Image 1 (cartoon, rainbow, N blue to C red):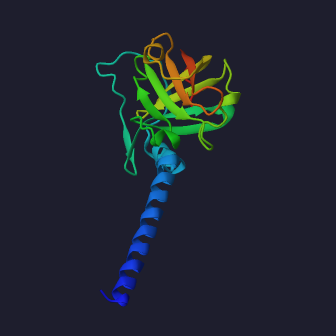
Image 2 (cartoon, rainbow, N blue to C red):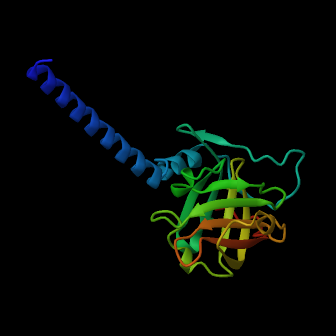
Image 3 (cartoon, rainbow, N blue to C red):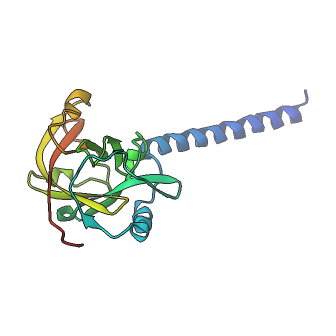
Length: 201
């Protein structure tokens, strides 16, 4: 093999190595950040397509599955709002450990039978105000039919792991499961349903 050929092979190997390093760095960055979801755009699309909003109370249906709406390849089942904290975001249909860094996800359950658990993160730009949430704060969950359900925070629990038995105890009507970067790994924000009457937004 001539020196020229060796040089060509050497340069080729260097280039391939550099490409692989860049790809690995990009993959690491993607995994750390989660999915790239434009929540503002998704929310605007949902608002445009959602039927008129009316206040409602949870009640068992023949099928408690929450209807979904697809926006830009992502499926959403609700809009979560905490007006005290100027927080209004879409809720993704299915939980995903990457997606939850960018947008709240339905972890399990349904709004109709008081079993809904929504997973969130305290990542910047999502629920980064979680330390300011207190018992008594009000929030709403609006499904894709335009039915709006109102809740009040009753209790905030600190957990170092997800205890599925306690998480699904059924004692509370709604739970926000927050991945927390503080002194504990998770926060359970426990909420009970309240009926706000028929006041329109």
